[in-house]
Structure formats: C-alpha cells, structure tokens
Length: 311
Ligand code: FAQ
Image 1 (cartoon, protein in one colour):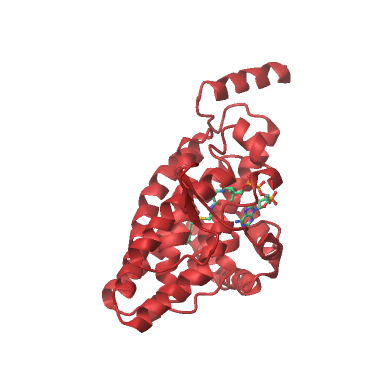
Image 2 (image 1 turned 60 degrees about the vertical axis):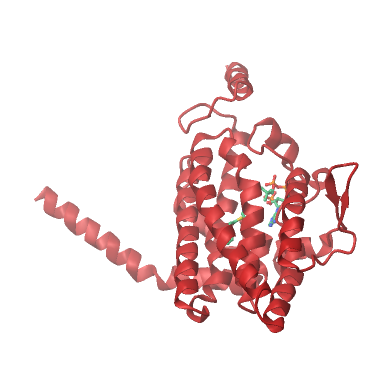
C-alpha cells in the first residue's frame, strides 16, 4: 500500500502539485523539510543579532527606522517559517530546543561580527541579495506552506537588499574614509556571502534528493553563479572591488569566473568554530531563559480566561 501511496505522491510532484500538511508524504520528505525549514527559521532569528548590534548606533533617525523595520521583518520571517515547519508535526519547543542545544544548524553567515556601520550596508546588499537569489526559486517549492511563506518573505527581502545597497551608495559617494569603510566591509563579507549557498554540488549531501522532490529548485552552484553574475556589476557601479583576483567576465560562458572558496573556513564555521558562534548561541539561550516569566505570565493569563469561561 505504501508503494501505491508513494507512486501517487511522485506523480503529484511530477505534475508540480503542492503537497499540503494533511497529504500523505514519504517520511524522508517530511524529515528533510523539517531540517531545511527549521534551519531557515533559525537563520532568520539568529540573523537579527549582527544587525541588532547597530540599532542603537545607526547614524541618523532615518537609518535607525529602516534598520529597526528590517530586523523586525526578520523576526516575522522566523515566525512564519516556524509555523510552516510545525505543520510537519514537530512542536515549536522541540525546534527551539534543537537550536539552543546546538543540534540544529543555522546559516554560517551570521557567525561573523559587524564591526562598522558599513557592515550593515554590506549585509543588506550581499547577504539579503544572496538570500533573495536562494529564496525566489523556493516560492515554487513543492511543500505548500513553505512556498507560500517564501512569497511574502521575498517581497520583504527585496526592501532589505535595497536599503543595504543604498547605504553602500551613500558611503561610496562620501568622504575617502567612508568609501574605505565600504571597501573594507565588502572585503570581509564577500567570501562568507559566497559560502551561504552551501558546499559545491558534488560535495552537497542533500541536493540530488531535494531537487527530485522539488524542495530545491536550483542547485547550490547554480545559485552561487547567479549571485556572482548579479553582484559583480553592482560593485562596479559602487566603484569598489570584490576581493577576488580571479573574478572575470567570461564571454564564452556568459558568466563570471571566480576563485576558489576557502572550504576549510566554511566547515569550521558550520561546526561551531566561527568568530561569533558561541556569542550568537548564548544570546539566543539567554533570551529564552530571561523570557521565561513572560511565557509563564501569558500561560497563567490564558488559564485564568479559560477558567472564567467555564464558571
Ligand atoms: N551554513 O547538502 P547541503 C536569511 C549544511 S538567509 C550552515 O548542500 P542543503 C535571511 C547543510 O545544512 C539564510 N550550514 O544542504 C536574512 C547540511 O547539513 P545538515 C538562510 C550549511 O540543505 C538575511 C550540509 O551543510 N537561508 O536568513 C550551509 O541541501 C539577512 C550539507 O549541505 C536558508 O536557510 C550554510 N551556509 O542546502 C536574515 C534558505 N550550507 O543539515 C537576516 C533555505 C550548507 O545535513 C539578515 N535553505 N549547510 O546537517 C537552503 O536553501 C539550503 O538548506 C542550503 C543548503 C542551500 C542553505
């Protein structure tokens, strides 16, 4: 009977039908979605920390308002994604527990420090730029709740990318010191942004199966190439240089060539040994522990209301 169900499921995937929470799905499909969606949710939540660092130090009221809105959007994205993940039969508490115990991954990019204001520009431009390239194809992913969450997330991400690029433009048109700050931020954020797309296709554990299930619609390498092709002309426009001597337009391929990523650094960061891994995780664990009284109060209030109704 399972074989029959599996055949029906495969046919639905082939017809590009969305799989919905109550539909039959193979256990591995369910598990791999829990893995990817929850890691994506954790990334949004941990991703608030590097930028949160600059909210109180933004250079003007306008910049502060935009940054606050952006960080709040990230909280919202995390919450949509946790909700999408819960439809697969895992509880929010289990998901938080996986993050806080270090069992679940989140994107490597958020383990780097934000040292200057230009880092906020570079994050919006490069990190949100990479996130959009990765997430637009996910609007078409096979699991309904994930696909629908991605549509709204992508709209907000595109505002985030533009606010970052605008910060970079302002700095690049400013004093020589400001332009130097922009260049320094590009130097530090370029390679970590390239790593966001994950290992090369031949080293990627999940790509082949995830492409078959239409969870992933493009491979890690395809997305990375698209990122380079889109971003290199934007750096030219800013008048700053991507820190890759091998970066060059290849007329024959119709794409940019680029240098080798330091995969050693990537795996070190993924395994918990990046510059800020410990700091990020302890910030999340502290927020959870210090928020306990709020959760308790909300539960006590809900119980009181419930008891009143029953009286
Ligand atoms: N960092 O076989 P693959 C954002 C792990 S955007 C850490 O290729 P897969 C917005 C991977 O989990 C960032 N770990 O895996 C924002 C797997 O380990 P596992 C979040 C990584 O899943 C902007 C192993 O390596 N976006 O937050 C990374 O097929 C600004 C083998 O890799 C998403 O999560 C990495 N970079 O492909 C917020 C998008 N790459 O699980 C605030 C959805 C790989 O077996 C500020 N996710 N690994 O233990 C995806 O598209 C995919 O999951 C990939 C990885 C492409 C990230």
